[in-house]
Image (cartoon, rainbow, N blue to C red):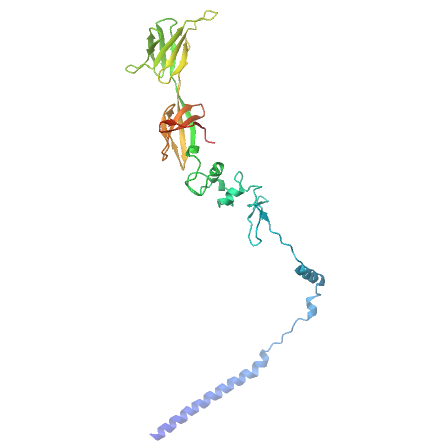
Length: 318
């Protein structure tokens, strides 16, 4: 048993000796080739940099020694701190200082209006934008000096009401006899005729309806040439309008209606309205009345508690 252990120790020692010799040989090989791996490097002589630019160096040193007098720009009679930036916009080759009112960057809106309301003045279409979503653009709010960032502050909603067209409903009458009883005919909208037996008296063309007209005065007249131009003065009872019928001369007692459109957020076309009729705008709790209808405009007034407000004209959309 003791002989076996002695032989095992000899084997281990032999292996260790072989490993040591191998490591020693490897280290010798590395040291022998180390000098071959060294590469000589050369530094660049001072002459290769060229001559030192003395004048430029002296100029730079002089600039460093210069004391500059920094002056704060003045905006609105107040100096602006030097550590505060000033918005300067370059537009079409021209500089625009947003803290100065002239020149305006987005005319007719002022720089102050754009700045005070924090509007997107870098956007060319800033005047068309509606940041508070009330249906009025920044330009419209500027024109009425309302707050473009507050939906409760906006121009009158009637600014969005426009005249679209006038509709004419003809009502044509004619005096067809020069003596009593007087024959009065209607040719439009439907044909009809009536005899006026005496003056003054009421008459009408619609059966079962109250008489619409009142014959006031009849005047027998002729021209120097002998032409009969007799006249019948008539009053429209419904409208209190007075007019004169001349013998054999048709008279158009036309009734006009107006068509309006409301363009707040969406376009709404209102039903045709006659003079004297009232109406309301979508989502607006106000009543309005048609005061008059012209060829290209309508006169409107607000009606509240039975009282009529100041009339205003609604024209065509620009």
